Every structure is written in C-alpha cells, then in structure tokens.
Amino acid sequence: MPEPAATAPGGTAAGPGRVLVAVYAVFALAAGARAAVQLATRFDEAPVAYLLSALAAAVYVVATVALARGGRRVALVAIVVELVGVLVVGVLSLVDRAAFPDETVWSAFGRGYGFVPLVLPVLGLLWLRHLGRTAPGTPAGPGR
Amino acid sequence: MGAMNDTLVWSATAVAVVVALAGLASTLARRRIGLVHLAAAAVLEVLLLVQAVVAGAALAGGERPPETATFLGYLGGAVLLPVAGVLWSRTEPSRWAGTVLAVAALVTLVMVWRLVQLWEAPGA
Image (cartoon, chains in turn blue, brown):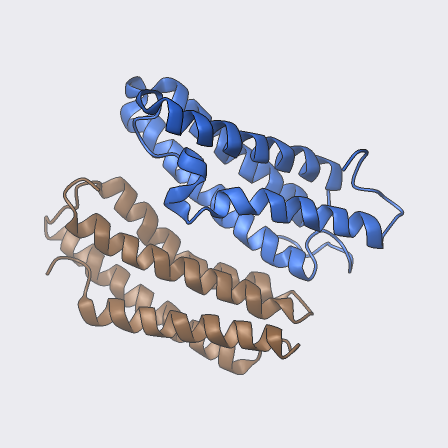
C-alpha cells in the first residue's frame, strides 16, 4: 500500500501491526470488490445481504486506514463493529439461508475465507490491548 | 486450455511458496527481509505479468470466463499484490517485514487458483 509511513515506532502499524494492516487491507479490497460486483450486477436478488456486504467492506476500509495511521479509537470501534458483524451475519446466514442466497465475507463466520474474518477482529482487539498496555499514554479505550 | 497457463500457474505457486517461506523464516530468525526476498518477489511478479498478458490475449481473442468482471478484478489484484507487499514490508524496520511479505505471497497464491477456478468453473 502506498501509505506514507508516518507511524511512530510502537504505533498501530509497526511490527506485528504491520502484518495486521496488510491482512485488513486485503479484506478491505476483497470485500469491497465483492460488494461492488454484487450491488452492480444483482442488487435486486438480495438487497439486504448485499448492503451488509457493502457495510462489511466499509468496516474493513475504516479499520485498515485507522490501523495504518495510528487512530486507535477509530480502529477499536471499527473492529468491534466487525466482530459483532461477523458473529451476527454468521448466525443469520446459517439460520436463515434464504436471506443470504449469495456468499458474503461474513457468511457462515467467513467460511469462504478460511474463517479469517472471524479470527481477524480477535487479533485486532488483542493487538490494541497490547498497545494500550505497553504505551499507557493513550489507552485503547475504556472497558477493553 | 483457456487463459490460465498450467506451467505459469504452477511456477507462480512454487515461487509464491518460496517467498512465503523465506518471509516467515526471516521473521523466525528475527531478521529483516533481504535481497533473496526481493528477488523471489520479483520473479513472482514477472510470472504474474506474463500470465496476465496470456489471459489478456485469450480475452481479446473472444474467450470469456462466466464472470468476466470478477476474473479481471482478481487478475488485477494478483498482479498488484506482490508489489504492494514489497512496498509495505520494505518500510517495516523489524523482523515482521518477512511476515507481511509472506501474507502477500499467500494471498497472491490463493488469487491465482481462484483465477483458475473462475476461468474453468461454469458460474463459480
């Protein structure tokens, strides 16, 4: 990514964080492209599912940018939304298959993507918590 | 045969695995990435570019995968990913640069095989 490397050492995009940003960027791209194709070619078939697909893409984009630029609070919010999203859509897609006729990134807890969408927010939260502990200047946020 | 050349696909697979292993090895050895990583990534990129030209020629010749837009998306993504991976890992001064490169290589590998699927499967 041609991101200006403006992150101080120990920031959200340094060390393991850089790996996290890379994976998030991949998902931002994958989810975004998928949602774009779904919305452009067959929006009428399942508008709700495809809008959720677009929401997922937006969440990944926000998380990627926030992690890359060191915006911990925004990253935290995005990652929590992501975790809730993958859990809710995961359950719904299994319970009510008719509502999710086409695979989205979060369908069946991200099965189509090797369950990485389920693991990723957990790693993200662990990483933010780790940063909050090592650099107490700016805590990741209350309660987490 | 189609647009996905067997030799190119398997070569890209092998080189992507080499890049991933080299990246993980440097992380485990607590070292930054070196010339080996960059050279291997460059070979991968060349293979992908050749494959893109082959696919482009097939498309220009009138052959079409079931989902042409998706195919083109994956093709463009696969070509750009090793470059993005190298750029993003080169600015990382720690041992994690290797893992970044490994992630990029593995995702590229998945995308290449997805391209094969998209070309062959009727309406994946």
